[in-house]
Image (cartoon, rainbow, N blue to C red; front, side, top):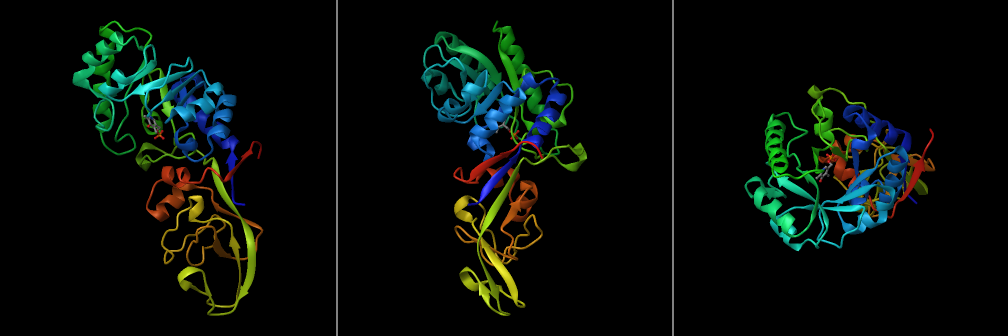
Length: 338
Ligand SMILES: *Cc1c(COP(=O)(O)O)cnc(C)c1O
């Protein structure tokens, strides 16, 4: 069966880059939403904990329950309110989120400083904080998210300025022991002088940066590689065709093999007329099927990709989507020492 190798040396290397940037491992929260960006929730959670990470961020309560034992706190970004649990905090994304929270829940208030996707509006901050007190919620954190951290513009600084106003308002209202966090991978790499309590690192921990080159070349290494195994081989005669729609025509006699990966596994089908070059330099011949691809040669197994950023460019998408779509049923194999 097709499988995924997780290069943990690279993962630790990436985490180290961020720890250096922020001054300590304790400031790093590893973002594990959506099966750890397709890398494998439990595998990445346990290794992050082994590295010394104490904070995690997930999307759902269900994800949090699976991994909270590894961390001091797990923040749930996007789910309805659930009963309080001492190692979990919930992001509050709207005024209704406060109203629906269970009495005594530990919450982190998301404030909309310009992305206009989720979070309470800055003008409602006073009211939100009053309601939090009324509902006897425990305010653990106040957070925001940037819309253009990985783009060449000054928008990031405008949002940072707004968040500065939010911080002062929260402090002026007498809230203590509230942690503030706003940074994702791109803004952490891009900005110096880190002075918040936490950074939420996703894509950078997995080895990718989407920052334009002018921000410098960051030393991040891809963690995931996707591999497939041979299911059969055959010798094609000149002009014989391969796969659905017979799109590939053999230009000469050639040995080809099929491998057990396809769009059913979350690998992209793409456009067969622009055939994809795999990590071994060979092309996919004809169309990608649900569970199979065909490639020249007869190696027992082949690496489909070991750099999601490169392959994402071929498909007109981003590394996040290439890895996140990989089916959770593909086996994840941890490679510790290479
Ligand atoms: C996904 C997410 C992150 C991580 O972003 P990266 O670009 O992957 O580092 C941080 N914060 C929030 C709120 C997110 O949803």
